Length: 279
Ligand code: C2E
Ligand code: MG
Ligand code: MG
Ligand code: MG
Image (cartoon, rainbow, N blue to C red; front, side, top):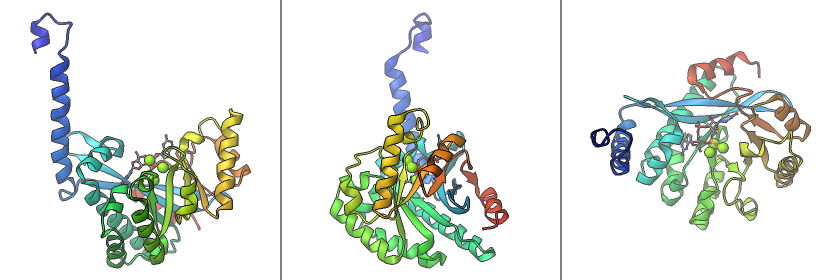
């Protein structure tokens, strides 16, 4: 309003900044209520085995149906959730909802696909993290072998020893552990040796130019080879083109996930995918 009074073409940086801070503050209090107001829901993105083209897993991805803004994607609120600690509650909700749904699908038919859930590094500062996973598995009845937990490299930067201990306990439960967005963070390679991963998810940035840039190809092939030598299952994220898929097939990547195969879909659609495909 001030800017208009002053003649139209100038804007007031100060008040814009205040608006932004105000919006974040409002969003924070709305996010605080999102869980118990049932505003969170899940999309699932299928994961396929390259060799057999079978649907072998799915990743649960959180969405927030905001009362005014409509559907909000994690990129718009996960940071805020981590800053405020609300991520602990959100992830717990996601874990339970995903485990319960998959258990239900398994009871309805011959479903062998497992489910992957993202856990923020903040859980690894919580002494009851392993207990939380145990409780949810017990409560939902999901077999631990059907659950994979996806962690990003931030987990290993802080409190590496505590994280290692918790991961070992999760492994003892029978839960699998994936390193997510591999190659985007600190990527110290010794983490791969030190931590008991089962799966390595190659970040989609490594795929982008793989069919046109020889250097990108070399990096991708090296990551796949290394992961295999360490006995990790290799999953490529963000597969968008046929060319990328055939490249991955040619270089023996185990599994793929990406828009080419399927976008993340609502649970009704995931259910159709699970029950229509003969596995
Ligand atoms: P992520 O775990 O690496 O998940 C993959 C992201 O890539 C998803 O974004 C997915 O929609 C997107 N994606 C999949 N295939 C393609 C593709 O072919 N092309 C492109 N361009 N993108 C693709 P989304 O759902 O927006 O999630 C973003 C990130 O938010 C996730 O990255 C994950 O780090 C985080 N996140 C999502 N759900 C949760 C959750 O429940 N808890 C926590 N802590 N983080 C979550
Ligand atoms: Mg993930
Ligand atoms: Mg990822
Ligand atoms: Mg990510």
